[in-house]
Length: 93
Image (cartoon, rainbow, N blue to C red; front, top):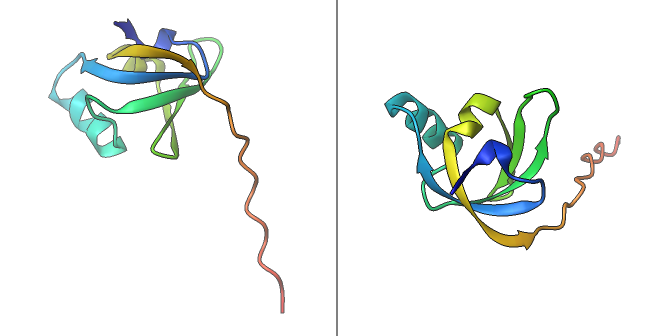
């Protein structure tokens, strides 16, 4: 197992364990991250910035400290990164 904050981008990983107390687990629960979930690391900001992950089609920015408490296992596969297009403005009548 390794910490989420050290996973290379585009890697799909499975959450195996969450270090820390009840508050950390509760916070991640509210974000929709649970033990057994699969997520993809989209970006790791430089200088100990946040880790951007995608889970169930939703992108979340996790602080480096929180990401370090999430223990994961890799499946070895690189995931293609899909660039999201901005929503088109609605047509004016």
